[in-house]
Every structure is written in structure tokens, then in C-alpha cells.
Length: 310
Image 1 (cartoon, rainbow, N blue to C red):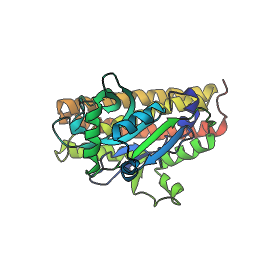
Image 2 (tube, rainbow, N blue to C red):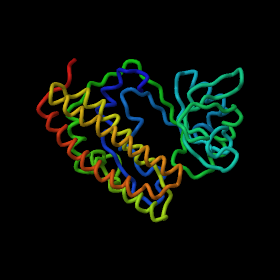
Image 3 (cartoon, one colour):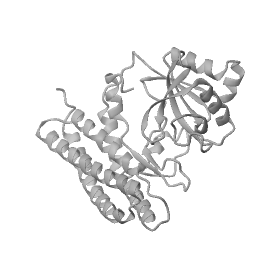
Image 4 (cartoon, rainbow, N blue to C red):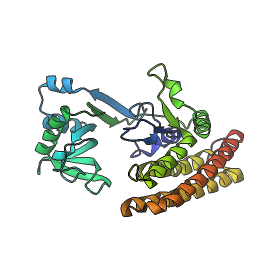
């Protein structure tokens, strides 16, 4: 969606609440809370089941090529064992999601976006036959993403910045409210930890890592940093004047401090240095206090001013 700058008001009106999944085997413990990531005015989305694809009579390679040629991205899971330059290539059968975003008939490869062998989020390539084998193998595996989801950017969408939604969701973030209750008509509320309370979960996990009860995992703190980066953009778009400048200065400082904390945890992860975790936990406790003060200040300015019109 961000390939079209007109989508920014929608992005900034959403992606505010954080959630932490307390289930013991959660594959992605912390993330932005999104009720349905396919529900966007900027996306044409189709969800196709494995049974539907089987009944279509079309091979997977031809199907995927046709959809990319129609300007759709394919979001699906594949067995990484068969995919070159992936974390588990030729070492372990492991299903993980990926985005097919292009193809090249001259060398018979698909263009993929996902995590490469160095666990960097990047663009890679995989032969047609390897992707087909990975899809067939994935069908028989237990995974959270069994279907193929097609996304295509809409060219005629429109969504104005929604200050009421921003204000309401920031309040829910600040108080750790259960945002999923707004969608109870579609699914039961989810037993998750929300908003500012996610700091405590990250600290708990680092405490367990320090005691050797679980590995060091920097992903949650990376998500927290992404949250602060996006908040800087949101503040710049929603408040102005001297009060707006003061909020923006705080947001920028909070983002920088979170980035430094995240970088420290990444180094601890790479070097397996558990002795660094006490300092990082202390920093997170201070960041929670700063974040609490920031959102209170931001809400006060947001309520007393309008959107930036420059």
C-alpha cells in the first residue's frame, strides 16, 4: 500500500494498538493489533482455499504466473525446505509465509519477498519447480496460513485522516484496553495483552531469558521500535504549532531511545550475552514511563487542536 503515497492517511489512522499473545507456543508473540489485515480500502483481496485451487485444474506455477501478470501479489505459505536462500532451505521442513511479487520466464523463477537465509527481510528468487514442490509439501503440514490470498492495489481508493479513530485507539493503547471487543460481532474477543502493558511482557521474557528458561528473542522489541517510528509520522501529520512541535520532539526522542534499546538487544542475541539483559530491562522500564507520559501529552494536544493543514 505504501507504494502509493495517497494511502498514508489510512496507515496513520490505523496501526496504533499493539498486542501480545500470551499463548505458550505463539509463533509471533507481539505485533500490531489488526483485526483483519486484508480489510483495507486500498486493497482488492481474494482468498482462495486449497480445495478451490485443486478443482481449478490449473497447475500451481501457471496459476501463480497468471495472478502476478494480473497485478496481484500472492500471500501464501510454503515449505522452506525447497526454497533457496531461506532460513531452513534443505535443512528442515518448515512452513512460513511469503509474498510472490514477480516472475521471469527467461530463467523460470519467481520473485519472492520474505526472510532470507540471513533472516533479513528482502527480495529473493526461487525456481518455478522449487516453489511448486514447496506448495505441495506445505499442503500436508500444520500451519496458520493454509490458503492463498491475492492482493492488488486499488487505484481509485480514498480514505481521509480519521482523528476520532486515532484518538480512540491511542486511548486504548495508553490504558491497555482490549481493542478486539469492537469486532465481537465477527469473532470472540481475543485473550491478549494490549497497548502499554506489552512492555511488561517483553520484560518478563527477557527475565526468563536471563535465567536460561528461554532463548533471547529481539522480535518484540523490534516491533515496539516500529511502533515508535510510525508514531513520529503520525504526530507530524496530526498536530501543529508550538504544542505540536513539543509532542513531535518527545516522539522523536522516544523513537531514538527505543531504537537504541532494540539495537542493544539484537547485539545480546547475536553474542548470546545474557549479562546485558538487566540493563535492557531497566531501559524498558524507563521507556514505559516515557511512553505513558508521551501518549498523555499527545492526547491532550490532539484534543485541543485540529489536523496539520500545511
